Amino acid sequence: MKKILKYFLYLVLAFVALLVAMNLFVPVYVFDSPVPFHGDYLHNPYQDIDSTYWKCCNFHGHTRQYGGVTNGRNNGNAVYDSMYRLFGYDHVGISDYNKVNDYEDGRDPGFIPGYEHGCNVWKTHQVCLGAKKVRRIDYFFYQTLSHKQHMLNKLGEQNRVVAVAHPSFVDGSYNVRDMKYLSNYKILEVLNGFVNSPEHWDMALSNGHLVYLIADDDTHDVLKVNDIALKITYLNAKENDAEQLYDALLSGKAVGIDFKLDREEKMENKVKRFKRDIPYLYSAKLNENIFSVNVSKPIRNVKFIGQNGTILKEENYKKEDKRSGAFYEIQLSDQYVRTVLTFFDGTSMWLNPVTRHENAQITKQRLDHISYTWTAALWLIYIGIITLICLFIKRK
Image (tube, rainbow, N blue to C red):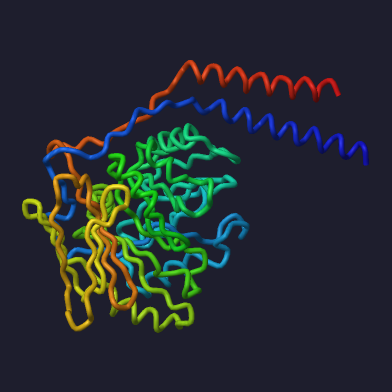
């Protein structure tokens, strides 16, 4: 028993040394102070949309991989695809853990190679779309702001679109305060089948980070009524073509639908309700400083939300009003305005923000800089720890 415990201790120390060594890949970042949106130019991503072009998409879902070890073991590729096609989805995306699944290549004309990156305790994950390669490196335990920024930077070099995934899923994943400083990512998974993250989005927007939303099921079992067709991204693209989908995502021509869930509902009834009751955005126009929204169904509640998540205007309507539109007069003090519409069946529609800028040439801010002094100091500490562990093992 003494021998077993001794070798177990050596194994633990070797594992700790490996984890410490992995941190040698991560520089220490310092961050500039964020600058909120400002200026006289109001940017509306929906100004020129064509309401006949909406494409129904899911980008985050899992199939059976690694012999069924990961969550998704009940989703064969064919079953996964056929269930989403049953609901009438235009684009069916698969984002297996740290692996690109090419099953949809040739089946989906808008095929986008993607995966979910992340193998760590706190589920600090990213949805990677347009993947050139899979990044195998991750940081298993606690991640500092530098770890998170470095990962976003590296993933941005290897993927067309990087989305911060389900930031509210686990405390200690992406903290709300992180979003004040993190940059160099383009999309935030505001709506997820497990959890919504409006606080993270408002923190990013309030500090001048122009990041747009994505809404995904994060499917793990497509045969369960509470695991499919929950959170839907509609992209304004003429064709289900990868380049057009990328463009719609990155330019903000997207809406997120939080579809009302009935856990007791049979799947065939949900399919019918989905096809019958999904709301569509007809227009979201900016006329000088008046932002007006029109949709396909009567609205029960509308909220216009601004800096720090403040509700700028809220209105409730009765069913007999049959109000399918709402407007907000944008004030000089409003740095951004985003809209959430709720319908009488409990479904809601989330719009990307109208934002202030100095002119039409919008530049997204970067706040991160590598501190070479602090990086060198930290690396010396890491190397010292690894050396001590190796000497201890060797001596014993």
